[in-house]
Length: 172
Image (cartoon, rainbow, N blue to C red; front, side):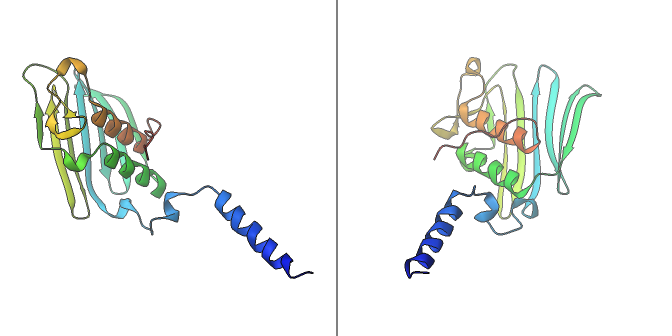
């Protein structure tokens, strides 16, 4: 073997390592959020239908009800990667800027978020209104526009955590 052979092998191994897909667990030491989320409850009420996502132990319960009738129920145990993607969605939606109440007069969709992760807590909700894109600490104040982009990103991340949607694409 020539002196260049070990260098070639090392170069191939390094390049091969970069080609492997990276996962959240490659960047975050275990355990990731399941051990840190102490509370997660999300509820969205629209036209009498209640959709809720709740952390129970290390499982996430997804439920859709109308009155006392359960239309759909699912229980999932999210992986560390699932939690990582959920937290990325929270950051993209800038939930850390959300205020406790977004209310616009009239009838409409109501929603509530109550969650705690380590030393961070968020309780926010709304009736007929959502956080404004670009100024998430302010109300959108346009009920005809429907859910704002920050709320849609958050809701899709929550649904993905519950196994009910693809996670939102996170912009870099």
